[in-house]
Image 1 (cartoon, rainbow, N blue to C red):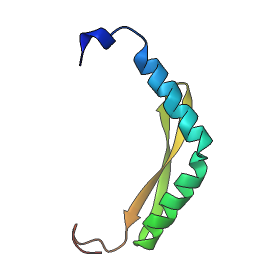
Image 2 (tube, one colour):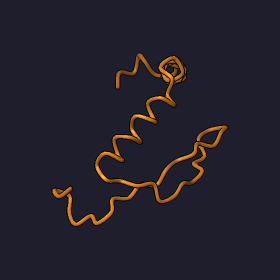
Image 3 (spheres, one colour):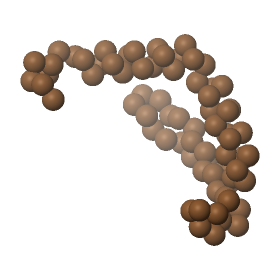
Length: 74
């Protein structure tokens, strides 16, 4: 990392930009598409948990593949 970029608050600016982009792209729609993709390949939701993220809690899914016998076999 170049020292000239340190202590300028760039990480805060980048995170603010990233959150704005997620909000503008309707992140919930992206999660729905991801969920359908996992289902397409035989994954099922087997649980969920609360993941603390800064000042809020994100709901995360636990997915499993039925009859999974190896990384190269679907």
